[in-house]
Length: 111
Image 1 (cartoon, rainbow, N blue to C red):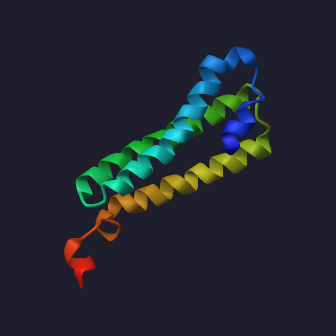
Image 2: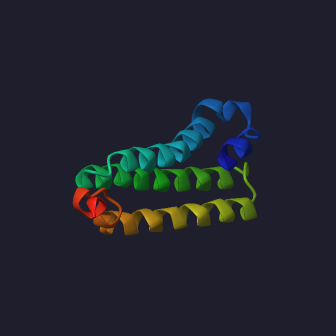
């Protein structure tokens, strides 16, 4: 939501390019994580959706770089958002590396 609010101040000529792309990528991180959670019974599906989320993290970071270089974001705001997305990427990487810790297991939950 922070990205959504910040992009409201981007120039109108960026509405269908940088603004739209940045909003879509950042939202896609959340939706892919949500989809992976609903499919946690299937580790391969979890990894697939979390991998998609990780790709969207990288895309968001690249669009943030463009926003900084176009001077639509100042350096401190960019640095803060960039650091948050780096952290999200690390968390996704950890989960992708050990999906069994997060997946639904009927035997484990039955006891």
